[in-house]
Length: 292
Image (cartoon, rainbow, N blue to C red; front, side, top):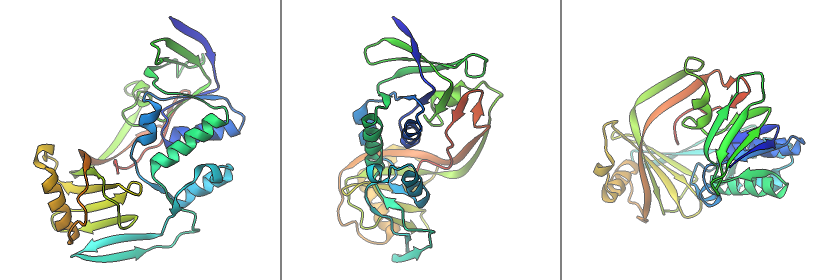
């Protein structure tokens, strides 16, 4: 069964911070929109990601009247902490204002979801098999997906915002030859480790002859660690014991608490950008840098 009589002005694919922020801005501007997310709400709200809202983002939410409803967390201290030869060397830098916040991204996402839905926004989780049609023709684009009940639905819209990342359906919809990919590979990989270990600082980075290491808070009881390693490394080499030993070596101090490691991934470090960032009535979210 197919439902083909739905219409909106903007269809947003992806409910990360970019998609949710855009949805809230459109809603406050009186522009109707629908956000489609392939994952369930619980997964989206618990997904661990970076936890810093910089000054520009804080200003942006304030300008849209969302500061009190969206921003959370403690003020972000403009300091980068480095460990070099076992010694902590903080680097203080200046900012144009002090609006930055240290806020776990899952908290920001939950807040954005609550505000969007609370203000009457249309957010649809568990939207599977999303496809985008007629994005470059004269007729209005069509978004097709299957809902949690197994029903295939279609939405006609004026514009599509592709906020589903480099591997999402939005970028893949643009025909071959219409999009140029620029990439830089750095020649090494990150071992990313999520562990139940509180961070002593909002961030700590170590410079060592064995490679870079970093610890970044992911909420009050968790940290994301990064270890630079060769591209040909395999996860089987990185037992929990070896991870903790390598962290201690590179930071030059014992780990006070070796908490449970909940995930480990090896990710080649690269920067990728596409040109152009639009095709017809489909617009891609800008993404730059690597998966930190």
